[in-house]
Length: 253
Length: 256
Image (cartoon, rainbow over all chains, first blue to last red; front, side, top):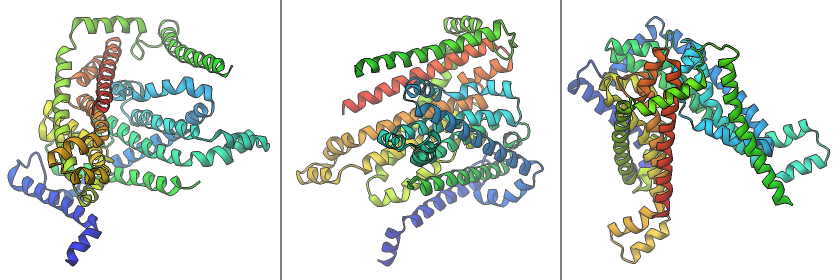
C-alpha cells in the first residue's frame, strides 16, 4: 500500500526502472544473442569509456566538436537576432522578406552538404558553416514572431513620451522579446547540433566523425558506443543549458 | 483609403520578393559569365538548367528515386504503426503518461542522427540502416503527438459517452479518435518530414544508392552543373512530398 502510494507520487522511479529494464535487455541480447562484432553490452561500453578517452586524438576531437558547436551557435544567434530584428521591426520588410526566410528555412539543407564541404574545406569551417545555416533560421523566425506580438500601443506611447529609437529598443522591444528569443535559442541549439554533427559524420579529418568511421571500420562496437555516448551526453548538456535558460528567462517580463 | 494603402503595400512586398529572386539569378549569372568565378565552385545557371532538363528527361534518377522512396515508405509505415499504437496504449492512464512522456521527449531532444554509425555497423550500408534510422527518428514526434492527442481528450466527453452506454469500440471510434485526430495528424506530418530528411541525410553520409548518394557521387566527380541540377531536383521532390502530406493532413482534419 505504502509502496503503491510512493510510486504514484514519483513516476520518475518507474521511468528509471523502465530505462534499466531496457539496458538489461540490451545487455542480455549483446552478451548471448548477437554477434559481438556488431553490438556491445552496456556494461562493457561503460567500462570502455576510459579507454575511449585514452585513444590518442579522441579528447582533441571532442574538444574540436565542442568548439565547432560553440562557434556555430554564437554566429547563428548573432545572425538570427540581427536579421530577425531588422526584418521583424519593419512591417513592410516583414511582409516582403518573411516568406523568403520561411522558404529558405523549409529547404532540405542536407542536400547541399557536399557544397559546403567544397566551399569551406573538410576542416572545422564547413562544420561551423553548416551548423550556422541550420541554427539561424529558427532563431530568426522566432525573433520575428516575438517582435510581431508587441502591442503597437506600447511603441506609440513610448514614442509620444519622447523615447529615442535606442531607448525604445532597450526598454520596450528588448524586454518583450526575451521569451521568444530564448525559445528561438533552444530551437537554434537543436539546429546547430544537427548541422554540425551531420557535417562531422559526412567527412572529417580530426573531429569525432573521423573516429566514428574508424571504429566502425575496425568493427570495434564497444568504443563506438562509448564515443557516441559521450557525444550524446554533450548534446544533452547543451540542450539542457538552453532549456533551463528558457525556463529561467521565459517567464520574466 | 486604408484598403488601397494595404493593397499597394501588398503589391510592393510582392515586388520585393520577385526582385529578390531575380537579383539572385542575375548575380549568379553575372558572377559566372562576367566576373570569372571558377566553374568548379559555381556553375553557370544556364548550364544548370540544361542539366536539370536532361536529368528529368533522361529518367536516370529513377533507380535512386525508387530506392529512396521505398526506404521512406517502409520507415514511415513502421514508425506510424508503432508510434500510434505505443502512443495510444501509453495515453490510456494518466500515470503511464507521466512515466513515459518525459522519456520520449528527452530522447527526442538528442540529435538521433548521432547513432547513424551504430546503425550502419549493425544494419550495413544498404537500405536497412536508412529504414531503421528513419523509423527511429520519426517514431518520436508521432508517439509524442499521439499521447498528447489521446491524453488531452475532454473527460466530460468520455464520461458522457460512457453514461449513454457507448461500448469500447464506439467510444474509440466516435469520441477519442475524432478528438485526437488533428494532433495525431500533425505528428504524422512532422514524422514524415524528418523521416525524409534523415533518409536523404544518411544516404549522403554512408550508402550505396539513393538520391543523397547520387548527389555525393556528382560532388566527388566535380560535375558541378549536374550536381546543382540534381540538388534542385531532390529539393523539388522533397517539396512535392511535403506538399502532398500537408494536403492529406488538411483533408484528414476536415473529414473526421
